[in-house]
Image (cartoon, rainbow, N blue to C red):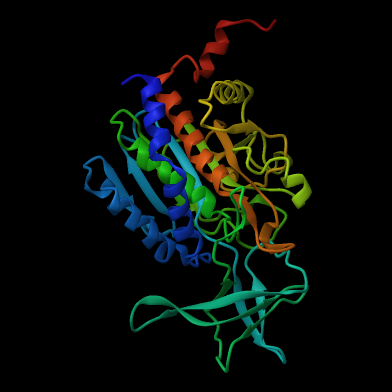
Amino acid sequence: MKTNQIISQMINWINIDRTYDLLQSIADTPGPSQVAAWTRGSVIEDFLKEHDLLDKSDVKWDRNYKNTGNGLLRQGDPNKKNVWLFAHWDTISYLIGEKSSKGYNIIPYYHHLMEEEARDGLCLGFDLESKQYKIICRGKVIGGDNPKFIPDGDNKLESGYRVVFDTPIHEIDKDGYYAGQFDDAAGCTAILLAATYLSTFSDINLITCFTDEEEGPVCKGNTAFSRGSSRILPDFSAPDLAIVSDMHSMSSKEIASDYLGKGALLTEYASNTKGAVTPPWLFSSIKHIVKSLNPEIKAIISPSYASRSDCVNVYRKTPNVVLAGVASYNRHYSNGIPVCSIYDVMNLARTISVIVLKYFKDDQLFDANLSYQNQLK
């Protein structure tokens, strides 16, 4: 099949309806750190079953790879030329602290940014008898310097429970802007759509990682970030190419308006180089791909700030890291419910698919050694 036919087929498959359905199912499923493999993991597994991936002999799925809390989808032969895709499936959450005069003190297990306001939340706990997570109660999350959770009714909360926001995805603008828990349900949606489509090619070797504990505690050093992915990378040789997807959160709605709806964002460095930095030869390849994309696939090279994510661990294995994502604002509920464009999520999935296809089918575009054939001019 010719490249144009492959791209056309991919565009038809990664459409807006399939993107929305998957994004909603992941985003609306509570996924606090250390829990997502059993909640959002079920959603992803159902999607894989629906599309017959688990029936393929060259596909292996581990919802909780070696008890690390990470989900791994392996396609093809990982010992050959391979690409890894990353997105974190845990969301921001709180641990239960002491009871107070107004509900319970809660301890942020992420970079807490919410001001003193109230948002819908829910408390999740593990039921030992049924061996399942269940909603203990709903209530209100109160932000500020000393965040609290006020449960509805007389529910008594215990250590071991987790509090998350309860904000189902909903449309806020006819241009395709939605509010919801997209960090990083959007990235998970994009890499899962891409991986599912790419599974139709026998010559593509892919490991898709849904990582846990990306959020984690707040510390200055990189050791506080992406602790989930640090548990799996030592098991494997370095990927030839890695694409790390996360939300590219803008500091304000006004700044985000320059990027929302423009497609996938591809940026050169994360967290002002505290995260990964894409090598010049690789970034030139990415820029070339973006310039030559089919008109129905939208992506831009973005100079905007992107936070570090799983890239801090992947970068220790290989410098060949591509940083991708979608624009959003209200990061971590800083000024409201997070917002992104459903069309950007779809285009992120399409763009990742094109990059992977090009990587396996265009050796001249992705060969760092070619630069040795030319002298510095």
